[in-house]
Amino acid sequence: MSSSFDFSQWPPNLSNDELQQLQLRATCYALAHGLLYLPPGTQPAIPTSAIHAPISLFPAPFPRQLFEQAKRLQSIYNVLYARVALDTQFLDEVMGTETGVGKVDDFVGKLWTGWKDLRNQGLEQPLHLGLFRSDYLLHSANKETTLKQVEFNTISSSFGPLSQRVSELHRHLYASTRYFDSSSFLTPANFPANETTTGLAEGLAAAHKAYNVPGSRILFVVQPGERNVFDQLWLEYELIERHQIAVIRLTLDELNSRASVESVNAPLFILPAPSSASSSSAASGFTTSSTSEPSSSRPIEISTIYFRSTYTPTDFPTPAHFETRFTLEKSRAIICPSIPLQLAGGKKVQEVLTREGVVERFLGADYSKEAIHELKESWMGMWGLDVYPLPSSSSLSGNDESTSVFNNLVLKPQREGGGNNVYKSDIPPFLARLPEDEKPAWIVMEMIETPKDVGGYLVRSGGGDELVRAEVVSELGMFGWALFGEGVKALDGNKGNVIEKEAGWLVRTKGKESNEGGVATGFSVLDSVVLVD
Image 1: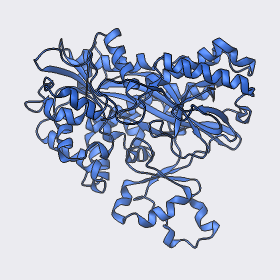
Image 2: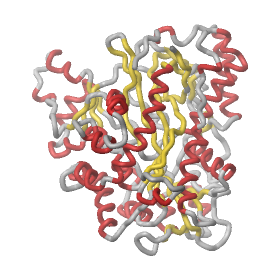
Image 3: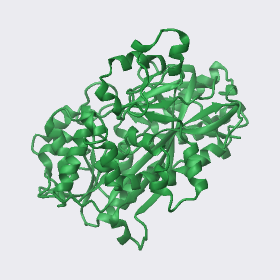
Image 4: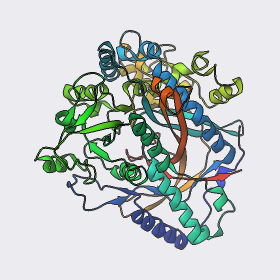
């Protein structure tokens, strides 16, 4: 599928007065509707201030048929990655320490080794939960625009609730100003519905219901000093208000003394907070909300563990942090993501799935050739440095012809969270410094050629709320959830081993000059889409 929309005509032209009106309305709406961050710096245990999240004034134009394609593909991706996570042999080969990435990537190796040790102890894990996000860019080549996947996220897929509020913000701007009749595309029919908060909470609630222990709660494992706390709290509020499920928010440091699991496959209990808990919460930044702490002195059983941390080596400053992660993993709680599902989200897995016949191994029995072809059409070319090594700067002549090979490439490691990739001309000197034994941990991906001359108005808080007009790139993330494993067969008479749904979407927009796309890392703003034909 492709589109021929003229992206260079976006955004519509407005006067300075009109832009100022939009900026005022947008920032006030964001502050009034929980589209918020905590401000930089150390936070008190009880927050006293907040700032609005970085936002775009105009929604990003996105071809309608490609948006529908992304929604349609999400269901297939939900099943694909659930099945990858259940294929222990495949993950051992691709991500393990004997033949896979774990052999050369210490972080991946420690996760895989801990998981293998637990398997040797008899770990069962009949049910897993995934809250996924598949990220896409528009690819403009040969006068056509198509949908191409950037990556698939299986852990801490953030900004769903805040993205829903940006969609509502852009609807409000239309309702209150009609965007000054500046574009025929700015109509209610072109603002797609976005109920990501409801969708993601539904997945968590499904896992909690499957666990089926009255009085149990969902555990959010969070990072200390988390500024993106409101994105997470909207999920907590949805769970308590719509599903009557209470949440506990704790860091790995706090769980080190409060998580109790007697043996492999035993329940996980959270012990009561020590008397010094209030001071520790202040030190760690906002972690435990007043509504989520157990009100009695008895331990609280956990039904579902939702990780909003543990995706980066910096989350594990000591061996004790890994031990706490493995303590949680060995319990009978339903984990989102379990270690095998976290490993399934590795860039190396993404690359291996593009190899001949691999995706058919997971989907061929249940999906048509046409559906699998459409899935493959969303991929760019990619390969591992262990499969096809690139030349380093020391082996290049230095002329334009010898270095041009890198101009449409990006190097990706097995890391999440933004800021880890190496692009274009930075690749040769990086390869020259990269130890030979670490190269198998990196994959090479062809660059996606995004539409040119697309403009946007970006608003960031903290610097006088300056409105910036820039040439931009917008990335669509499609959310989904899957409850999967052998235990699914006992739920509601389901005959398969995966229950899944598409669960909303987000858009992140960044200046064209930035290679990275993370909102939390400061590269992007939150956005929504206006559908175009």
